[in-house]
Amino acid sequence: MTTPTPTPALDTHVVVVGAGPVGLMLAGELQLGGAQVTVLEQRHAPTTQSRASTLHARTMDILHQRGLLKQLGTPPQGGPGHFGGMRLDLTGPSPHSGQWKVPQARTEALLAQWATDLGARILRGHRLVALTHTDDHVHADVLADGHHHTVRARYLIGCDGERSTVRELGGFAFPGHDATKELLRADIADLTIPDRRFERHRGGLAIASRGPGGITRVMVHRYGTPATPRTTDPTFEEVTTAWKHVTGEDLTHGRPIWLNAFGNTCRQADRYRNGPILLAGDAAHHQMPVGGQALNLGLHDAVNLGWKLAAHLRGTAHPDLLDSYHDERHPVGARILGNITAQALLLLGGPEVEPLRAVFGELLTLPQARTHLAAMISGLDHTYPPGPGHHRLAGTPVPYHHLHTTTETTDTFAPLQTGHGVLIDLTDDPALATCATPWTDGRVHLLRATVPPGTPPPAFTAALVRPDGHLAWADGTPSSLQTALHRWFGPPHPHAARH
Ligand SMILES: Cc1cc2nc3c(=O)[nH]c(=O)nc-3n(C[C@H](O)[C@H](O)[C@H](O)COP(=O)(O)OP(=O)(O)OC[C@H]3O[C@@H](n4cnc5c(N)ncnc54)[C@H](O)[C@@H]3O)c2cc1C
Image 1 (tube, helix red, strand yellow):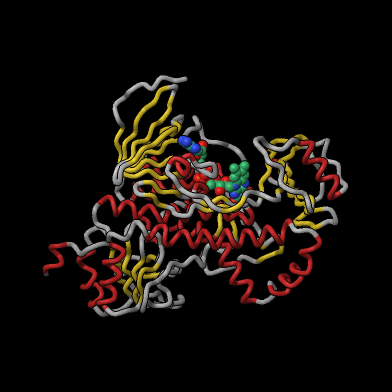
Image 2 (tube, rainbow, N blue to C red; image 1 turned 45 degrees about the horizontal axis):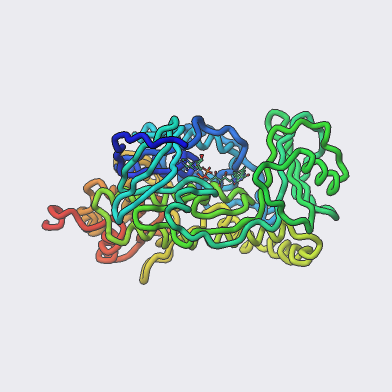
């Protein structure tokens, strides 16, 4: 047993536990908002494991808004999407419509660099082992190089994945169910088999696709077989046996690179905040990674939470702002878990789901049904409750449009790079700008602009955009704008308010 070695407390505004994609995104968002962040990561080096590889349109929009797309280069398009294995065209209202293939390790490297450049401290080889908290402080007990350290912070966020220690130590309930069915997955070298896209055979489901470097990824499920309780990855023999059973093909001559099994586990923390402890990403919701939604959902949690917590720590936030993280993100998570459960039924169900698949297949040919599901999977329809009397666009992600100011060509995404709110004012009436002046102390940027001739105009003439790219207000009276500014950006600056 290691003897605790007392060391001086390390102080920081926020401890983020976990340098996965969600923790790194959150660290960058918090730093952008002026908070000081320490990220604790138990691994000594980033993992190169092949995991999520899909970024959806809403995530690409967010990376665009933060100015991070350039560093990503032009990732390959992921082709058509699917819903429960049925082809789904993901075209939607985004400049990055569709799905994009970016290995998770690449996304993590990009976000780690961004967060570090913004001043976040990432401590690798540091594992959270215990924590205590009062109403406004957290003491984290961290094990590094065999020694215990205390890190003291105002807030601690568990971004520590599906087996979250923070969730357990922080007293969060995690209702739902464990896996009843599973997909076996393997990346295999030295294999020549035909690609198979969600092929349904009599005995099960088979998927194969040859990727970069000649590695073939196979996934297989035998209908009617329950999930195996696992503490380790499946063996290659399990995969080849199941594959042979379903397709008749022999894979034993291949060389397994990575083996993995994932089931239809579905759990969600009942609340995302317990005093100064919060959860985001897989720590808050555990889902089957079908349709590549898991990683994207977690990144959107981080972008919703970062600016709110940073404003709260600056002391400029409305008292309810931080709690709006749970209020907004829990329902979005629940809805995605619902669509994933529906997809798992369609995908892993045997002959008994064929009638359901047939009806669903017909519905998918209807443009409105396709658009609806594409927006859901792409994250483009994740809206937040707009509040009574608000414009129909309030709560939705800001659409991309080209704009001109008196000095430059810009667009509706570019001003979000700084992480401030933005009032986009396309009117020639100074009333809105005057009304917003008490918030232009660094919290809200005023963008008076016009729509360039020949480009489609937005569906608003004025809109208040939150730092996470969601509209807080559109096309209302100056007094309703003031209410929205107060709600999302806190009280007006006292000196400006006196004028
Ligand atoms: C094997 C596997 C395959 C997957 N395949 C896909 C896929 O094909 N498609 C898809 O969309 N999604 C997939 N996922 C899911 C996707 O990878 C996750 O949704 C995503 O990584 C969630 O990000 P996160 O930051 O919330 O958690 P994670 O990426 O799990 O990161 C959590 C981090 O916290 C660290 N940590 C944990 N406990 C502690 C502690 N006590 N102290 C300090 N650090 C700690 C971990 O080391 C880890 O780095 C897969 C996941 C796994 C595990």
